[in-house]
Length: 331
Image 1 (cartoon, rainbow, N blue to C red):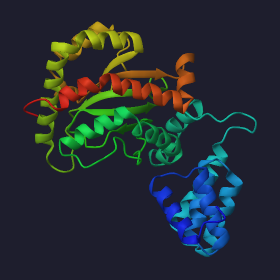
Image 2 (image 1 turned 180 degrees about the vertical axis):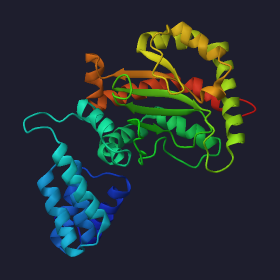
Image 3 (image 1 turned 60 degrees about the horizontal axis):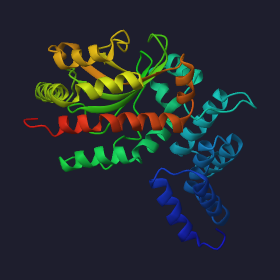
Image 4 (image 1 turned 90 degrees about the vertical axis):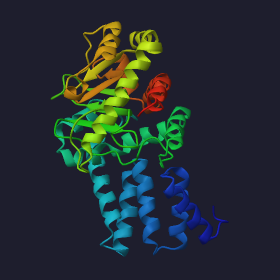
């Protein structure tokens, strides 16, 4: 790194930042820049972000304070320093391993934080999970199918994860808006939900809320998608979906209700095929659920790599059903 010129280092630092990569290489590059150019506020700020991602609180604080000494009004550095303070306060006790996924602490943040703060508290872990999912072959297939249909986005999930709502829920939808079948992930806290859990699967939003004023046409489009989904499911997917739900702990969920764990897989599939009041329900979902009070699920939820594999496997299983629905005629 010492043989690289400052312009080369700057180009590499900006390239890594655009990719959302604040790992070890980014830390080395930005550290080299501030050695050569100690007045570079942006490099100090990026370096602080790198240390924040590594949970290296002291170095993150030092780098961000250096940036703020140069520019006390630097908003990004100020926000990052506040995030360092929050995460440092909420970190596990020294000597206790830090989970890469989601455990009691993260679900507690969902339940206890005001709606506007929940996103800030969890965005690092959720964002890291979404980045992993965006790099999978399954996500690429889904994104490519959407591009073939005219979509502009090249990745499936947006890094901006949205807000936790007042009911302790954080839901991340695929890119493209709610007027199409949506792959999505959701985190639900207890209370108010019956259990701390995560879901991943395929959902249909028929609700009437829409600020753009085109809710009528949008709902009709979603109802047409769902009818196509029911046709595909009845014609060629009912047996396969039933088997998958039985083997992988997948459940139906609709409206604001918790997952229908009391329905056997065959009953859930029958419900999906024969549902005729989707517009009144406003939301129908089928997918895998992981519950924090289940020891096996807890191990998956606490490990980002394991959770990403489960999420990718779920999307890969549902992809052919989604594709037939998405590309169906008259929608």
